[in-house]
Length: 250
Image (cartoon, rainbow, N blue to C red; front, top):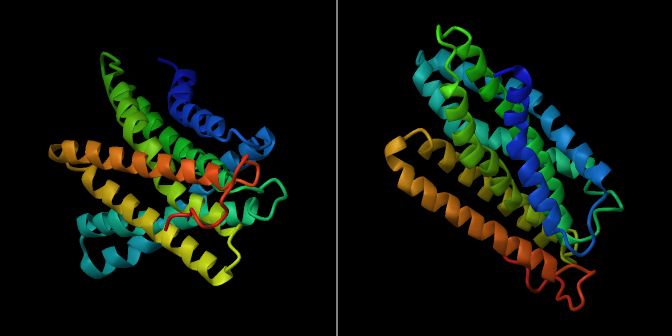
């Protein structure tokens, strides 16, 4: 196995899911260059997220003198809040006011691109780290690389986009709400929901015995996302018959 294969394994899942969400935007597809730009911005977002997580963890470890507790708090509390907010900020500042952001579904598409860019670069760190570890193994076994790839391709990479779509959908919907106070609350609730789902995922994924719960949890998240895609498309101004605002779910 060479490093080019590692790159493909790291970015392959993100590319697949980006294609999946892009194809869901049936009514008025977004410019590919703008979608790619948000994917790259998502990758860049890993840097401030990493620095913010260090800042979050350090004082906890200093006070408690426990690496385990500080790491656990980062995993369950710090990382979900920091990562979801940075992805949200990227979309809000990077594309929300663009003229191409002109239907509720756009919030989902651009959020998916940003979240998958973030997840793909993060994935490179994990898969690349596993690859480097194999270089120290006498027989050069690549089983560890494939194990990391499969787990992250099935769970971690899609999880990033599933959770972020909660606020991405809310952001897209809010642009078409006449009541601006309601719109702000709607987005805030979506952001909080994504953080809670993200924190729950980070907790459960570290307990192999809870895999049945994880599968059920991911299935539920998919149901929530698919329903939001349906509602976003129904409420599109490009739909043959739209019912703007009244069909948006909290």
